[in-house]
Length: 384
Image (cartoon, rainbow, N blue to C red):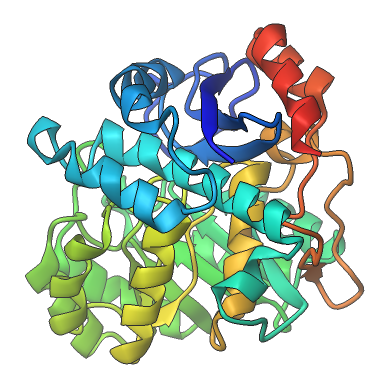
């Protein structure tokens, strides 16, 4: 099986409201799908968390390194792409695009072997995993209403993030938001807090994070995420040493080499690489295994697409302490493009597919509608 074609499909028109600035609108592209076709007509699916224009530009650079390559050797082929593009910049657009290619190659590999990816990663520790609803923070009354809504939908874990929290120099408001979230979710629901300090012009530093962590302890918060600027390694180390709640982060880093200093500094309790940005499944596996060696829990960041969620589920099966996956409730890029809708069971768990590859089938017409690229979406017929 040789790679004969690689295409990008940008997703437009229904981008979910995110924590980023208002400069990004629903009609903009923040996600793209990657389709890798082989010379015998099979298609693997990947996903990239970045603007579709960048993904297409990245593919223009990488395509010559891919066409004619084996479609059954994702680790070797992805490393070839990294090795041949160091001088073009490491960790940005090209790394993001390689993520989508790598996911698609693993999908093809699993389909060729007739096995779910978790088995090819080394074996499955679970066939279900808890999904946590990932929602934005709101003013207290609406926050209470939102967490109550998702708890009523069957979620046993909810993460709230970004919004007004930490952005108004108002500790009373910050605590009121957390209190309202806990009241809406109930005492029997895991509650995680994401400050979103990778936001543009984040105003707070270590003292704010330390004081906030003390407050979060009173509301039984499971982890405190992105409490500091993404590059503030030393501050994260101090926060993690002094915080009464676990500290999570890492979604802005890419490639495994970037994570090693954070692990050596013991700066995180929970590491959250994003498979659609970090370099794909190949890099995610290496990062998660390295984290395990340092006693750091791996739970992937998952604010992306149905394809990213499918990859996260397979990865969650492969690691003994990965007990949750991130789930964006209501995102059309997750719910509207799949043949089999996602559904929580009575315990708030998602089933991990045991069918070959990612275990995912997309709807070509739905993808075409969201991408305005009906021709490329036709390739999905070969992804079944």
